[in-house]
Image (cartoon, rainbow over all chains, first blue to last red):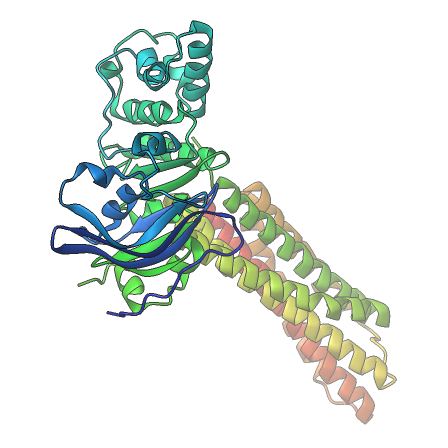
Length: 264
Length: 209
C-alpha cells in the first residue's frame, strides 16, 4: 500500500469541488486519510473501491450528511464547493443541500403522488403558485426522462411505479430545487439491467447541466458513465484520473488489481 | 434502446471503411503506376502508407477502449474482433501496395519498363475488384458478396503461378533478368493483396453468420 497521497487535481476542466488534506473519523476510527482531489463541474466523477473503503462516507461529506451522525467528525482539512468551505460555521447545512442534491441506493419516494414528490421541495421553499409548480414538475420529469411515462398519471401514488421509475423520480425530485451538484450513492444497485441502462443514459444527459459524483460497486458502470474515476482503498485515495486512463492503463498496481478482479 | 455510446461503434465502422478505401486506393495506384510506368502514381501509393498505418493504430486503440469501458457482448464483440483483424489485413494490403510501388520505381530507375504484363493486368483487375467487394460486403453486410470474393482468390492464385513460370525463365540479358525478378515480387504482392481481401471477406462472413 502506497502511503503517499499527492494532491490529485483534474486537468482540462473547471473544478467545482476542491478537497484538501481531508481526514474524517467515526469516533476513534479514522475513515478517510489525507484526501486531496478536485472534482470538475459538469462532469461525472465515479468513486470505486471495495466495501468499507470510505467512498460513501466521502460522498456524504459533500452535502454534510455525516452531520447527522453524532460520532462523525472532521479531523483535518477542508472541502470547498465553488470556493466556499462547506464546513465553515457560517454555512447552513440545509441551504448547502439545496445546492448539493442526493440520490440514494434504494429509491425512497415519499408516500405521495408523483406530482407531490417533485413539488415537495419547492413547497417547503414557499412556492405556492400552481403554474410555477406545474412548470417545475414537467421540467424535472422531462429532465429525468420520465415525463412520457407518467404524464397521464401524475396524481397517482409514486409507490405504484416500478423500481426503475421510482429511482428516476427520486432523481427528478432532487433536480426540482435546481442543485449544481448531484450525489448518487449506488443509484442502480437495486435495478434490473434495463432500468440501469435508463438511469445511466439519464446520468449521461444530466451532466450537460449538473456536476455528478457517483459511488458505484459496478466497475462497468463507472467505466460507462464517468469522465473521471477515483479508486479508494482503506480510506485512502489510491488513484484518480481520467476514466479511460484508470481502466486502460492504471498507474498504481492496486488499482490494476482491483479493476481486474485480482484484489485481496 | 441504443446506448449513449453507440456512436463509438459507428466511429469505429467509419474508420474501418476509411482504412479499406485507402488500402484499396494504394493498391490501385501502385499497380496502375507499375503497368503505366507512371512515377507520379507510384509516389502517391507510397505516400498513402503512413495514413493507413495510423488508421490501423487508431482502430486498435478504439477497439481496446470499447472492450475495456463498454463491456460489449454478442454481435458488438464480434464486430470489435473483426475490426481488429480486418484493419490488420488492410494494413498489410497497404504494405504490399507500398512494396509494389517501390519495386516498380526500381524498375523505372534502372531504365526498365513494365513490358508485357498481360497476366499481371488480369491479376490486378481481379485483386482490386476483390478488395472493393470485400469492403462493400463489410459496409452493406452482404454475405453473398463476401462468398464471391473468396471464390475469386483461386483465380488470382492460378494467375500468379502462371506468371511465376513465365517470369522465372532465364534471360541472357542481366537487366532483363533483374526486371523479371522485380515482376515476380510484384506478382507475389498482388497475390498477397488478394489474400488479404479474401481474409477480409472471411471476417465479414464471421460477423454476419
